[in-house]
Amino acid sequence: MPQQTQPRYSSCILECCDPPWRETPTVLSMERFSPFNKLLRVTSLVLKFINCLHRLEVDSEKLAAVLLMQTMQCQVYVEELDFLLDPSGKTVPGLVRDLDLFIDGEGLIRSGGRIGRSLHFRREVKHPILLAKSHPITKLIIMDVHARCQHLGIASTLVELRCCGYWVPKGRQAVKMILTSYALCRRYNARQVLPPNAANLPASRIELEIFFKHTAVDFTGHLWVRQGGKEVKMYLLIFTCLCVRAIHIKVVPDMSVLAFLQALVLFTNLYGIPSTIYSDNAKTFLGGSRLFKRLMLNHDYQQKFGSCSIKFCPIQLYTPWVGGVWESSIQTIKNCLYKVVGRGEMDYFSLLTIISDIQSAINNRPLTYRESTEKELEAVTPNMFLWPNKSPGLLLDLNDEDFASNLTPSRERLLRTMQFRYQCLESFHTLWYNEYLLSLREKPKGRFRVSFQNRLKVGEVVLVRSL
Image (cartoon, rainbow, N blue to C red; front, side):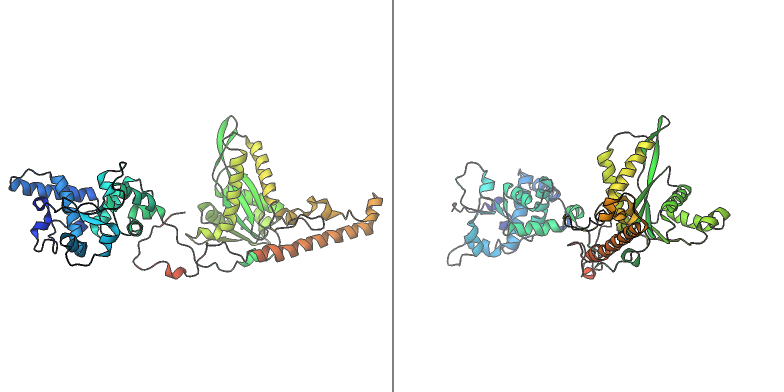
């Protein structure tokens, strides 16, 4: 244990009190200052003014640091000071015994430890100043050290604090408590509030009806395409079937209402007229809904859409998670474009070819998990419902011996083949209900929180992030 020395009261605040460590006068209100350097500078200016009045030549900055440390220790460690100044006949406090405390020549409580003979560290690091866990000065010092180590975290802040010559009992807990309330780090490190428990899926996603009967539409960002010797902007309009998760991509020249309606006409020529179209609250879709109602009065549009009334359903404002079904498809399309095209240039027909390949690949993705055995059917994909004739096994029963022996099948054989095709489609329908739809019962872990109502409290400061 280092040799205890009697404090020099000529530069020590302890001499102002009777008994010296019982009551400490506060020079400044420490809660009014946020950076520790500012508190140190203001305190040194006050002491410099006092020294000028008494015509004393003292290092005001050093005296200010000693004064602040002594003020903190006198306010918190009364029992330890009482024992260290007069240990006769008193019980050794636990903190003095555990940290090997002593008072240095400036009247500060320091920790002895077992590394006093190390030549690697400075004296201030080998015998650090004892700080109080929940004192305003300790909070300012920890925040200053945290900024000095570039806001790295609890462990880095604690190491830097000890390298600066300070020791805090239960230091990790103290640093964590202070950094939790640090506004800057809390802003960047805060996690978003988990949404409430998911509600039931809408009927448009759990009933296997006509494909694209319930459709969602959305635009992607612009793409640069070479056309006529110059680069022009092109956009992708994605149609998503909400039941089988199939997509259809149209390349449009702009995001105008007219381009949207023309793409919708091309889409209906392929897949029929949808009964419901879901979208976000973009002006194009809202304008398309209003314009579509007016165009329904036109004779040409009456001939095409007169027998069917399309219902436009924009999602509610500031609820982007409602459109997560089609937003995930857009993310998949963008990832494919980034990997296939990258920063390369392409003309209009190259873009159409790439988009067609991406659409076919996405519609061939499996919706269910299937074992790779010969006796099992293939994995259920959106294309199995959209284009069942793409697979020869869905059209003709190749295992039929009569068919294999005769290249010109009769009417009975063709009927059996169509019946086999119908059975395969029904099998896919059953698999969609039993494997895909029932798998939606599972929720991603940690994504939803049942006790959502207890997460936010009245008067709590939150950071609103715009998606």
